[in-house]
Length: 304
Length: 335
Image (cartoon, rainbow over all chains, first blue to last red; front, side, top):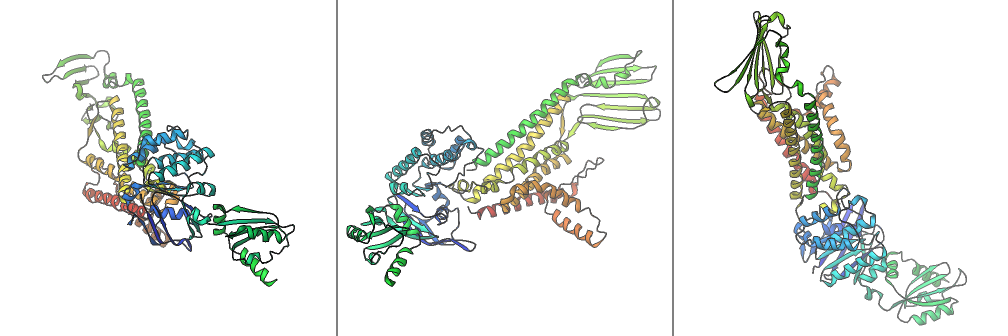
């Protein structure tokens, strides 16, 4: 079980701050999802965690200790793109890891490869993108590491293997190991992760357990007959945390009594009003999309 | 920890072995097709004309001596068969009968010396001469140079899409870098040794190969092993510092070195020529090949013996400095 502490991490490439004052504590023995739009700084964060990129400032601690080469014995990493050597066979990659890492289990790697239906005698250059990802995953999970950092681990995998990878991640957490992963497939993150953090423009914008973030919030959704409509002060209701409006459709994030807001929306002329549970995708989108909707609508209603 | 680099070295040496193997095979075919011409007696068969008296004697030391004596032509041939030590043939003939050139020829272990004393001309053929190791090393260095250029980008190749593997091993970057350079050094030296062995085998097919490793040859061996390593270290540093275009560096390195070397020969007859000469001279000082003295004095059998010590020291220094530059840059590489 390994706890990772990131304090005030900053990484600057030229004029761009890829990570900016990023602070996060990743608990051990759990599956931790790191979400963010493209360019949010997820991969850079992973690179800093592994010493592949040198932070401009800030600290990264593993169980209170800074990263040293020996720490890498305990960390397995699957990058978002294939970094395998095309001219080598899969078996040679296994041998390479066997020689480099004391805890690496070639038998486990071969078992996982068999699950993914990959012949270890094949050269990497003849494998598809998904198969290369599967090879990297098999090797990472055979490392017996207590921290796994997986950057888009299901990218290119078919749905069966995606589910298999999620199971592997959950199993690792059950064994007391930490799994930190990023994915654009939010459904997978919701299924596997106990804790999530959302990054945007190099900053942490949201963090917590999936259940806590959902809380008692609901989405109230309605469709108006035409594009010009008034919300009759609904946007100013203290229970409405956010309003999103697209053409004739309005989506309200509501805390507390959603039924009352739904009734008011119907009274304002909306048709097909429905209340749905907040999901991780909503949380993610609200966290990273510009929060202009509520302000604009509220301002408009106030002036009218 | 450097398994990948060892695999690269293995693959490279495998190709070297295949090429050398083909060379040895061609030598075998050549040897078979030249069998009838391979006996030293066949080279002097024209002295064995009708009327030649042949005498066979066994000397006390076991040498089997054959004497061809032709009173009519005034030719006298003594063939001493020394067993594993080859043959020693002395041909004496009238000077008027022979051509006027005085040749001293050495092809492999076969040495031919011609001399004239008044009206008598003597030709001595010795098949037990030694082959200077210098020749072997000249070939071996060409192969080592090619292998060095193939292996010379261990770090740039990792930067080219494999850093996530190379830099996430539980070992310091310095140690892994030294390990990678060490693997390549073994590969380059092994390529030299393999080439020498292949050349030796080829020579054995044709004659009793005795290799001279003394004097200048010993220096050639040392310099022949060190110089490709210094060149490798130069390329290793260059490809690490310019890792985005390492292929261009590898392709351009040798032509650039040759051009710079050629420009040092420019006579500084005017200001432009003087600047070109001076710049080229300075640049050439950074090239390890500059210090490999290729001028060979066949009379003294010397190759810059007086300056050998400091030239070798420079090669070693180049290897260390360029290697250290490569490691220094590797320590600062980021994914």
